[in-house]
Length: 575
Image (cartoon, rainbow, N blue to C red; front, side):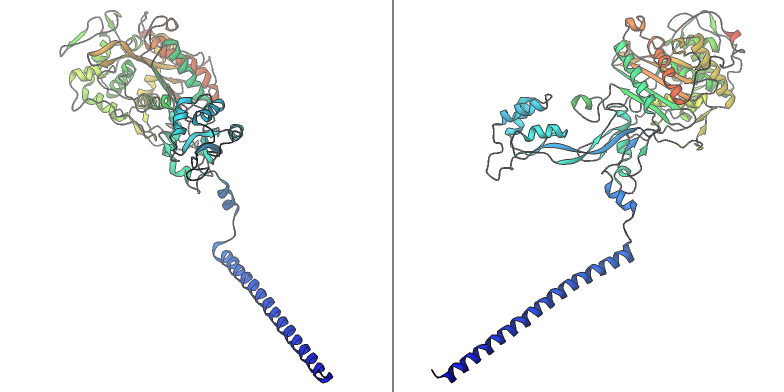
């Protein structure tokens, strides 16, 4: 090849190389341009979004941040802010038989070996039941709410099918205390019975769950009430007990207890049997605690104007094939104060007969006794109420608490009206701000209420309620011991014993109801089954415990003025 040809080839090669380089440079520039344009587009979209949020949705506020951090369900607290129900993150134990893949074995070891290992962590589980549960191969919870250290021990077993989902759980830091007030949260995440059910929507709403739901309950008074009722149940071998502490001016429930109780942290079969609320849902014939209401109605109606008037009391009243009698003779005659002190059926029946069924039933209706109790709880028992116009015998037996049935809460509301100046108000489990005017309806005249405060104080000072006396607290109240009805009539060996009280009687603040269901005659009750020996002492022990925490200090220098009634009381005793 000639030198000219070689030179031409070299020149041509150089030209091709320059062209390649030029094209590559141009392609690189375009690529850089596209990347820049891409970033610019993303930045533009981001800026547009930020501008949109700023103009139309605003910046996230502290409230938005707090709401995002709130638990799934709001807290419930007592009237002083003490937590009664809280939400917290917790581990659960879940069985996932498909963890090792489809078609693979659900467990590395045998179901029984795994069950035995789990029982080492949770001794309350049953090996046989757990073995069957694992062998069935169905996914599901093996246990809710486990501790982190328990999760670590189970994880060390090396079983992939045992998983630990993290969930928000409901926790009741006071255990079973106030269980019937609170209720519980079920596996569906919603509240059941109690205030958990009442407040369900509010506790789940992001807009309201940041503010705890505050109850009227005082945890200190609640604990004391449950403690004293539990002691009385054990001492008298009663099948159940119920109690309530009620603010007479606002209707706020300061404490409410139904025993036996349940643990809302763990609803097992034993707990399910105790969910029924004896205070608001069970109706009872409450007996002689109704007698002061009958007397108050008669005083208010003007059929009793002279408390010194005497009524025969040594002969049973025969009416309609039925005989009204007293537990034992209190002498030939009694006046109204003596009749209440000795708890005379015979005299109370005569007072009711003079008053008439229409007026007595009207008073009891005005006290809410013919309808379900007024309170937020969903479980509210319907009273057993005589139908139509009350006959003469119905009026007489109703006057001392027989022939109709109601809840202990009905009784608490009635006594509050009887001692607070005569105003009936609905009960509430929601805290009311001090100074709030709570509406109600007048049932008794203020003068009638003042007279009843004297009479109730007399019963505790001199009569069947003496074991409820608490020095310095001016307790007033009335016993009631009612035989329970059965298939063959009233059962003399099964009674409901109740003490209905209020304190301090010179300026009543609280009503206290204590009830025992089928107490036995034991050494602790001096071999007696009646309220004077078992329910009244509950109040006598409870009032000094709750008085100071509720702002009522004992004062032995004060009392109800009963100087005009003292001369009417003859010496004697009775039940």
